[in-house]
Length: 137
Image (cartoon, rainbow, N blue to C red; front, side):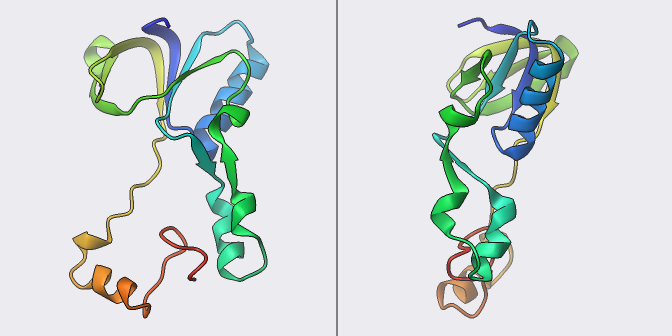
């Protein structure tokens, strides 16, 4: 696996997959690395429909490997830090990757514990979020 890519995309969510697909369509020769640690892709825009009980949650889940465009290198790691002055990033696994261009769309990490009392309210079921448990919503 090359540690240098013309383009590195951080995030295998809808945004990252779409950017990779669009750029590959325009220029199939460009070397793209997509950094995403998860094996599964969740189509979060449908979570609202799941919460409204009009869409099956299982249909929002796909294997990441089935969605990454052909010719894009899947780097199954997590980014730890950036060094934009040197066009370099380091992963939690300790690997360094360099790039000519970078697109960062890592998505969200839900952290209800940052709001006092929110975790407790969610645990007893009086508060819900489509992004933590769309089935409960």
